[in-house]
Length: 352
Image 1 (tube, rainbow, N blue to C red):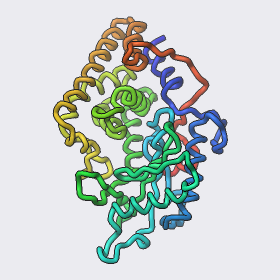
Image 2 (cartoon, rainbow, N blue to C red; image 1 turned 135 degrees about the horizontal axis):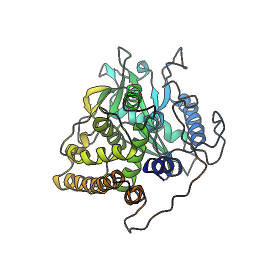
Image 3 (tube, rainbow, N blue to C red; image 1 turned 120 degrees about the horizontal axis):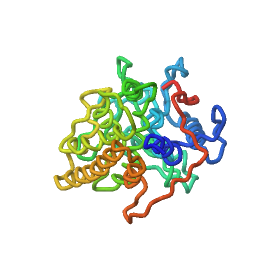
Image 4 (spheres, rainbow, N blue to C red; image 1 turned 180 degrees about the horizontal axis):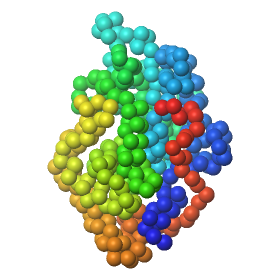
């Protein structure tokens, strides 16, 4: 097995979302990740329509007032699907503060959304509702949740006003557009392809797999979208000739990006995606950088082995990152009948 074959196989068996259904998922197939998201998304939207004033759209097919976004839409989510982003565009005329002569405050908007969701799930003991910085999360269980992000159209209709209630900042609305995020990642995936093979999104998923194993707990927790955009920053200007070189290039450079915030929002250069880095103390930053550099030593060695023709040993080095836990025990690589949903996802999110 070549290293390239190893990664293709690993993506299929361990990383990519599962799709069991033939054709478009209807939401009723047990064990299908896409069905799970589809069914929960549709049911939640129908309930939200009863509780909130969602902006009417004359063209829901192309200009929807609610849509799935985030890593699920960009095809960079890994299994199991969690923290699925649901974007809802509200009618600004129904959310005005008379005294402010403007929109209600971001905090008031988040509070109103939380109240609506609590009402929807008041009879469900299994579901909880949690307030976040930009959203309210519906937690169905430990493995699945939906982040409901409320927003208003900007006056020019080119972006959205999204609430930001970060604890250490004054609450405010930020301007951004998840549709631009989607297009940006698609563009990187296209421009970095070589000989017809697009690897960037797949590498982004592999990196998120690493993040979930290595950088998913405080104090060294790295935000998923930050990791994805950092990958675009580091890898986006050159062709990605293989999974191994792409991963190695990222890990060899990543630690230098954790001294201060530097990654800007593709939809609004005034927003910093990694602004939380500025709130970390120097010891935590050093710990993150040290862990990234340790991973880079392994990948550099794997590259050397691959270039010398010893692909079996190269794969064993990569397994140290993907399979070996802290107790140095390796997990087996058991293939399963799963496929990733590619560049043509089924509706209703295909228009976003």
